[in-house]
Length: 360
Ligand SMILES: Cc1cc2nc3c(=O)[nH]c(=O)nc-3n(C[C@H](O)[C@H](O)[C@H](O)COP(=O)(O)O)c2cc1C
Image (cartoon, rainbow, N blue to C red):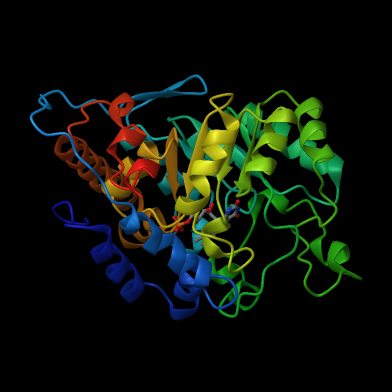
């Protein structure tokens, strides 16, 4: 057990670090390049200053939202992260149970340890399937169809990683199967053959030839809605919408793709303004407090995703740890909403920003 709900996610991070093998910890914690973007992600949310409303009746706080046909308890989703078998023996099955216990939507990764059928069998809350388009396009579509059959309700196309980024501390290649660094979905592929002849910055799991046309292709080749993840530019958010994306996720891969891209909190407002409510805008990167969740919604996001934090919970206490992370964020979000004088998510509007254009 994690024990009584922790005071913050920082404590859980410290426990996870103690518990995990150093190489696995490094893989989880690492960012690309010199880690600038990851640090900026984490630092950007606290920089957003708030102007609360006082003397508002906040006795009935409501964090529920409707997102792409799902009724969710809170605007916090679990971002796709690879190979949960590295962090807990039950792998994604533990994550699925933790998400379900909190009524949260989670995103299973192409690079999951478990295959989509096992993920679907373990999941009773809604889930989406993250897609890295494989060089073998037929295989990619078959995998998406398998995910749909297993219960996934949307695909999340990751757009910001055509090649593997420079990551000094990613040693998954040497970790191997014993450490859970296996990819159940990709078992049918002969990755060594695929890798042969690839440039060394290319990873056999990633196809560097993916373009915007593939967003339309992925939409038309199977039945699930497609969400585009990894958008930072307002013009590309519009492009995603024009290519039929059901939602966009403002993300820089948790600082694990191109280093020195801006913090997602800084990129979010222009994307929100460009998309203008045509589809939901989600955001991830550096969210470590329920207060950060509130700020993301104040800046116009419909919901957030967290990556590293729930993996800390998974490493420390499996499904209970994942649930504990979601519970901490939920409780902190409710407290933030009460102190902001914003009893519902609809009350989290830009009016609550201290630094509005008018005050500058
Ligand atoms: C260990 C780890 C593995 C990840 N694997 C994937 C992946 O397979 N596909 C993907 O789209 N994003 C992946 N991401 C990025 C997350 O989906 C998310 O964008 C990021 O973790 C959010 O930032 P945060 O960790 O600061 O919350 C990974 C992130 C981490 C930390």
